[in-house]
Length: 181
Image: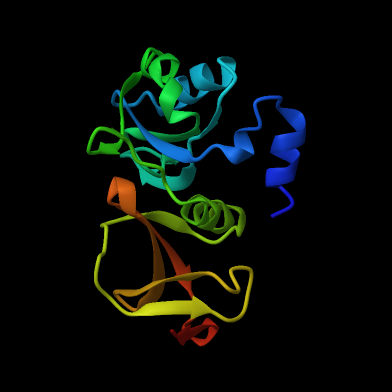
């Protein structure tokens, strides 16, 4: 976790104290996640556009690429009562909402994604799961993280979900690392 700034660091570095503001999902135009995140950062917001590494085989070569973990979405901390500057940012289509206003995303869900990506383990998007066995990792770099157990062919994977977006991330784990909750 040393690669990521702590919430205290955010509060000390920004007069607006973005650490006190909740995360929201921001829907972007297709393939505009990085452009939108950069524009939000330039406006003084704290965006987060997680990416994963993917190996693509072309007819003549293998290409490594960084792809958005949640295509069409970035996360951003902001005051929901002052959302117009976010909505007018290039690449932004809308803010994820239920009812009349934007609905915040739990800090724990964003922190879980950051922990998975900083672990160095192979992570990739996967279908959103609402049902399944909840597990906790008891060893390794993801110790203490909770999620849903998924078996993909012969490999065990743990799924962590962002409920508001109905999107999930899976990471390969050793079956011996987990316990039932």
